[in-house]
Length: 229
Length: 337
View 1: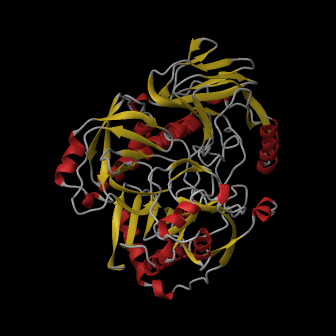
View 2: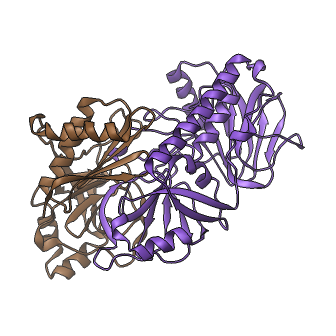
View 3: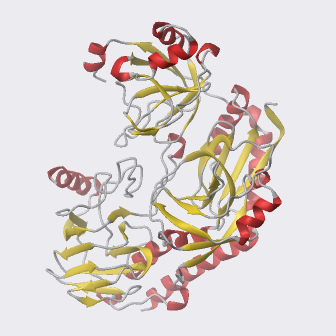
């Protein structure tokens, strides 16, 4: 169905308003989320504390003592009407080195077997195109990217791992992502990148941003070990 | 330890403050972290707010010691923290009652006190609630990361090296003279939120209320839910009657932003209350706890019970205003002293 003809405004408690633009993961819906997030930031509305953009919705966290829910709805409605006029930045393309398989990609062989192709073919497919970063979430700097080539669409692990090492490059359904920190996780791990995705000490803490494009390329184990940013 | 000392030096340089040692940690207790009101504006990068789970208690503690309401304090969980004062310092303890003692004598909470060098504070055992806040004049100083000193435990940054306090840690505060006129100041008891082992939590339905049946909502509003041991700064998992979902909806939704107090209902139909270390999630949310009831959630511990009651957003905003009015009245009262 794609974009709703009319955006849904849903309450998330007394300080959250969720703007839902569509019911699927698609370029069209995601672009609307980004346009809206950008326009709200440019407008600089007093009383908006935070805007959380995700696949198909935008959560506005506001202070009701500064901005009433009625006024917030009106302001957002107005912004949405003028949305087509806002300039939109060109996406950046970021290339991400990955050492595939072996101890770095413990599910590569299983994924290959699942699709009845070779591990080399999995790597080739995974590196075959740039992916759109639909959102950053789950943990600091974790990019949700897609869409995978049809031949790589794979279910999650039946039992999630208790610990996934940082830098792990993984897939689940149509999505691919990178574990920016060590954490539990149920995605199928294909490899690992030496690149750091999140650094809290930096002024701009993340490498990848929603709306950018990322393309993977294979590196050797030696290159991985000797990688310097 | 060494690294923490270096970081403190960095904090000192960055903040431009003259720092002094205020406490040595003799025992860290079950879980003690440094928290302020949290970091905002970074959730688009996957960074949750963190910050004091009971923000009201943190604010009052700060006002009691002459600070602005947002300074960093200690969030003390359940029991076991033991501190030694390194100098004269004005402090206050607010929030849950963990039986604080000063050199073996019981200490009143929700009022300011003074310590001298060598004094020992201990939090012996849990009497009521789950989390206590200890504020000192000037606030505890650690490096600000993304605008906040709050510890984000699963992200391993903020506070002291992104971790809980350890034995031997030294806690620093700005070198400012203790506001002796604040001594003995009490927060009016009428305005202290009451804590009970059975909490009534007010909620606003949604955002996925349309995923649940009328019967599901009846179950949700009429049942007592038990707080399980799976409760931490990320969330509180509850045990109780399963909440019925509409037959034609999926158990999970496309991941979206979260707010503290959101009540997720995963596939097993048992609610989970979201707290301050989660940023996005793909479980359906039947309702969201109102802001002024979040301090009650922060004070829940395993074995406590909760019940949910729906209210309108207009009522919730009136309560929000009322809480702010109490804080403002208290600020006025302090100024008149």
